[in-house]
Image (cartoon, rainbow, N blue to C red):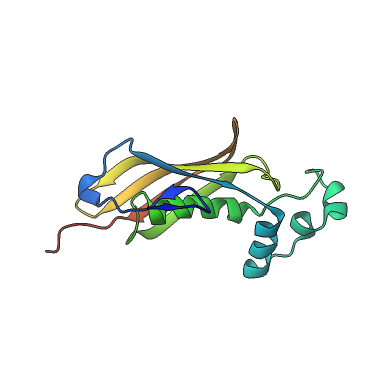
Length: 150
């Protein structure tokens, strides 16, 4: 099943079926409306995200998306695709490398780096890109769903 708004294939891959190097991604074009909605939801109304005149005088030279809005796309891949439904976040590190602007199409990719089958823990490399520019990178530790019920 595909979600038209974010172009992702939904599903779950249980820890028993995960493999090192397995990767999934999502693409989404960020709009000013997404930024406004995120500001409302998060209560982060920093004018660098909402006020073009203010943002013009910053190092960014214009409005940018919240970093955590971009990071949310990583969460979408983890929660919907890899490993998918039933996954529990245990930790996340992020490094923000470049701004995301309204109109940018972000591709968020998650790749399996390590699997601890006995504890169902999976370490994932996380990356978000706009074109050839990496805007975010980091790693996530998750508890993956299992198809064993013992």
